[in-house]
Image (tube, rainbow, N blue to C red; front, top):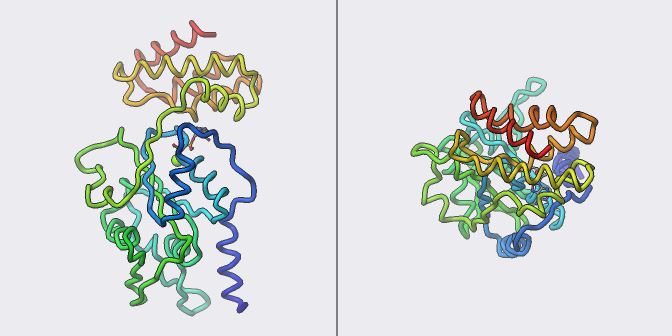
Length: 274
Ligand SMILES: Nc1ncnc2c1ncn2[C@@H]1O[C@H](COP(=O)(O)OP(=O)(O)O)[C@@H](O)[C@H]1O
Ligand SMILES: [Mg+2]
């Protein structure tokens, strides 16, 4: 291997997961993803924040033995950020592959997290990668990259944030298989909380119950339910010795809302459970 080939090799090796992420399947999503990977189809993961989408992709990347390159999309994300750019290095201009090029060349899973946040020119890049051409035009170099067999495009999207400007266009969404995520069913969520935090299953069950009650407050001051992530945070604090009231205030009530009345509603629920 030449030096630059060795460098690229280690650059991609850094994206391989060396430990199996803990993931508890909800309903057949593992098989669907395996089929999509085999058939080289792109996948869209839909669902509210903190319900297990990223953990699922990590788990699938591990199962498939493919590197995982995650890009957190934001409104300033440009095509160059994804594809690559020329950089000045010791008075020389050198080309630096962006995450998407890296994934296309080395058969990684490229996970575009919160795709609707990205600028519209990124969708232009994605389209030719999602049909049977599987190509990535690299405009600045005047070349076109053909995706290797193991390359897979995965995007996440929260339909709850839907607004006229931030909706995913039909021309984009109809290129993907979609898997719908939601908070795991109560029993499974309690197991997840217990596993992730190390807390006693009985306390995990109380937190799971609190989660369900807070989710019922949706449309009463809350736009979205409490995430599994926040329930895990609360459990982790309790496991560290913080009192349940303080843990739930810091991990659930205060992150979820700034409105005093909505907060009071949640504090009351905490008080009835603990
Ligand atoms: N099915 C699941 N199996 C294991 N952990 C889960 C599962 N669903 C949610 N979690 C927990 O919830 C947390 C948030 O999930 P994450 O995948 O980061 O959410 P998002 O949907 O925002 O990508 C994870 O770190 C994990 O602790
Ligand atoms: Mg995520």
